[in-house]
Length: 426
Ligand SMILES: CC(=O)N[C@H]1[C@@H](OP(=O)(O)OP(=O)(O)OC[C@H]2O[C@@H](n3ccc(=O)[nH]c3=O)[C@H](O)[C@@H]2O)O[C@H](CO)[C@@H](O)[C@@H]1O
Ligand SMILES: C=C(OP(=O)(O)O)C(=O)O
Image (cartoon, rainbow, N blue to C red; front, side):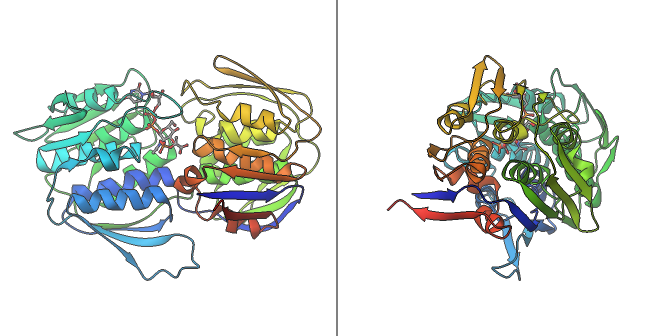
């Protein structure tokens, strides 16, 4: 199995390209099931999760053709075409690899009136139920049964418009219900919708496909269902979590890098938290310039749905704050088990106390390299960040988590001067 070896202590400088957003790609790809015409997605990141989603769409009968991209390019163009749906079942073997597979449920149901999708189950960071997805689809007239580990949904006369008020904010449930509503008969209202920029990306793509949606970017989405959608060409937004991750990397290791293609606008609370910790950023013509001018200082930050501070940035901030002057308090309100990086960071010399949903980090003058194990995607990135700043060698194992969400991470970091390589443990 591959590992990543880092010899820490080098400052970073230069330009680092930001890829298309994983979490936007994973909701734009199932949108292709809503039409029999081609949906061309530009700036699609080369990630294990994107390959898994292609595989899932292929087994529903959709083609996923990659167009003329060179191996050295970041991102690629993919044309997805679901001319005819040949299977409405998303099997366990694919869904268990990637939770976002549940996002085929709404589109399949809307287009075919029936869908059978394996229940995704929990994952390392938490339980992650799908009750809100199901309640939302039921509000549009779906009949749903849970048997033998599968969600079996049908809408014999087709979905009809309805009103759903989510009791809590869910990114995935909002996406699933929005994709179903665009082909339902009549008007739907989604209240307490998630407002993440990736949902705005999905809604804009659906509009480009002929959908009628009002309130994009707000907590109330109003959808007028259409009989059919058409094809479109759409560019996936830049990855705000990848941007924030590399911003934390340069803030921790020191130096100055330009994150090419990044936009400050979608970073919101991540940018505010970086500034509070003493990191400087400037929007340039090409992206975002990030530098650690002086020392870092401790901050208090709690995760929350957008526009709050993202749970997907909590682990990377924890790594950065290990080397800040003073103490920091990180509170995780979204997932119940998302501090698994804390014991690994402690093995590198960090001073962290976790109590329930809070992690108290006391800054230390230095970290030391160590063999560490990645437990989930963003936890893995926190270990990379710590390794870049640590004295000596860090070897991160179980890096398949990283390949889900960071396109050619070691190549990008080598490009800004890091001593990092992928090695095989034999
Ligand atoms: C592919 C993708 O876009 N993944 C993102 C998405 O995940 P995902 O869409 O799974 O996350 P949700 O926003 O749905 O989850 C938020 C919270 O709601 C709970 N919940 C969710 C659905 C449900 O039916 N019932 C329920 O109780 C979850 O357990 C969690 O505690 O948003 C998360 C929160 O920003 C991010 O960390 C993930 O990176
Ligand atoms: C939790 C994440 O992703 P997923 O929902 O795909 O597991 C993430 O991107 O940090």
